[in-house]
Amino acid sequence: MASILIWVFLLLFVAVFALKGFVIVQEAEEMVVERMGAFNRVLHKGINFIWPIMEAVREVEWKYIRTDLNGNKVIETKTIARIDMRETVYDFPEQNVITQDNVVMKINAILYFKIFNTKDAFYEIKNLPDALEKLTQTTLRSFIGEKTLDQTLSSRDEINSNLQITLDEATNSWGVKVTRVELQNVNPPADIKNAMEKEMRAERTKRATELEAEGEKKASIYKAEGIQTSAVKIATGEAEALRLRSEAEAAAINVITEAVESSKGDPTQYLIAMRYIETFKEMVSGQNNKVIYVPYEATALLGSIGSIKELFQDNKATKTRIFPQKS
Image 1 (cartoon, rainbow, N blue to C red):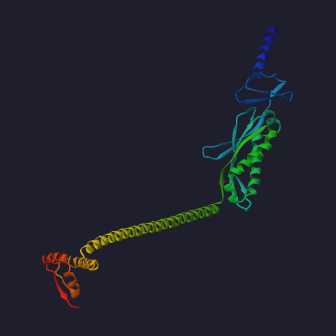
Image 2: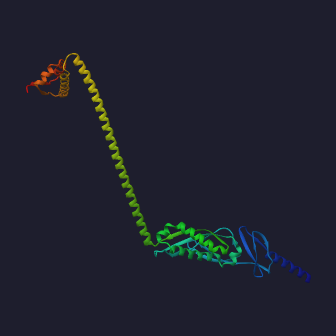
Image 3: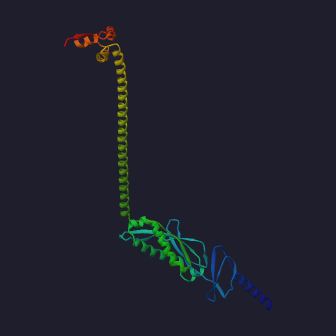
């Protein structure tokens, strides 16, 4: 009977030893093992074995921020033994900061970090997420305090970069690599926000007015240039037409002069008579009855030209009457 109890005790001891001794570590997780209260080793992914009673898994406090159903951020603190080695996103609560020009504004930041040394994350700092939050808040206040409101709103990328560099240097001894910092919301006071919106609308209106005036100015310039170019072309065309008419008229006069001189006539009288004929044609071209008084000397001159008879014959078909008038 005694031997049976001993065997049962031994089997229970082995079972408890096995249950306590075998530890399965998941992918992207690590655990810290202490032997007799001192750091011994880090457990990596897979099946690991520890000696119960002599060895134990180290546990630490870890701060979590979650969002409830109403959209409010809730802070929770838990005791954990497994460290997640993946990159972690930590969304800090909104905080008040003061700019260089004494404007109080609310800013919340998002921190991306990754643990690369599990031992340092356990032993070099207590509650790593809480320490990261406090360090980020104080560093952010320091950066914003050196800038005005306008500089803060226009240089968010610069602030993000400087924060990332500063936090990464400060947390290196904690076994943490800060990969990125982002300012999520920058909320100035309501009155300043309204003033900024009014200023922005005024600036846009001013810009639109300037663009419209510039467009009208260019349109006027183009229109004036077009009118000038058109006038130049018209004047050039008229000058060319006048030159051609002059050349044609000169050629015609030369032909007439040669013809009249060959017949022993006076070309000057012939040309004057032709001018009279052209004038008479314009005067009698209308359909209404007309009475035209012609100087006596002109009729005498016209009568001396034989070709003028055709004009007087054409006038007989109309009711136009020409009366010679002595000067």
